Amino acid sequence: MSMKLYNSQLSPYSARVRLAIYAKGLDVTIVDGFSTPELEAELCRLTPMQKVPVLVHGDVVVPESEVICEYLEDLGVGPSLRPDDTESRARMRLLSRLGDLYVMEPMTKLFGQINPKGRDQAFVDARMAELDSGMAWLDHYLDGSPYAVGGKLTLADCALAPMLFFYKQIGPMFGFVDPFARLKSACDYYKGLQQDVHAARVIEEVEVALKRVMGAKG
Ligand SMILES: N[C@@H](CCC(=O)N[C@@H](CS)C(=O)NCC(=O)O)C(=O)O
Image 1 (cartoon, rainbow, N blue to C red):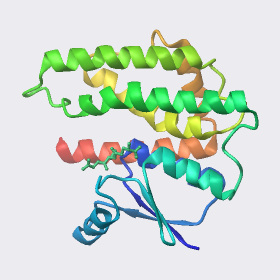
Image 2 (image 1 turned 45 degrees about the vertical axis):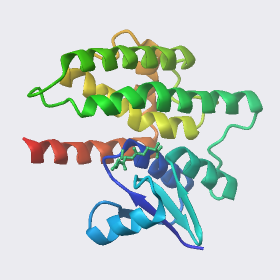
Image 3 (image 1 turned 90 degrees about the horizontal axis):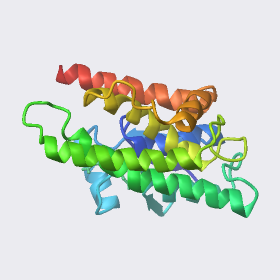
Image 4 (image 1 turned 45 degrees about the horizontal axis):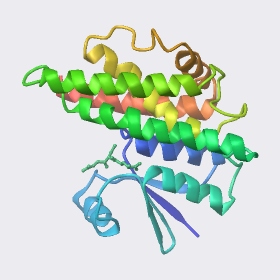
């Protein structure tokens, strides 16, 4: 049965799913969900959230990046991106969840404040403080190895690779020169993870998409 992913190259959530797809070697048709009015209308019909990513597999429509990744795992296709033991699986899910709740949430809000013109500094300071906490919590649960859990690529890495890419970019945009300075484990982890061919591919894709958008704005 064919699979289609409604994607956006710049979306960290879409990048998470693409990383799982690449690592599993799946044949998925990937379309930019916001590239044409027709695709936007399709996306609108598929899910009331109208957000990417959305996976369509035959009659099954799966929104939400984490749910899509788990769905692909449950299909049992390609190499498994879940560790074998229960404790490591809990650790994998913890890292993804910490990232979603405490890193992505404030970071997404900060993206709306990139332009210094009209920036709400009190809002930025509050989100930055939340982001600092979220990253410190992630750092606590990482040990600096190139993969987050169990010495191989897992769904935690799929979530964290694009997230940490954006974290590295957003600090300097708000005057923090070295956002990883106090985060040794997260810093070592992110460096090591980029040696993984699939993670490196997705990080490069997001980087290209970000440059394109920033170039278009500048
Ligand atoms: N919790 C969702 C978040 C998805 C999300 O926020 N997607 C953004 C792109 S990064 C989007 O499609 N935004 C369009 C909109 O909100 O109109 C997930 O994990 O998939």
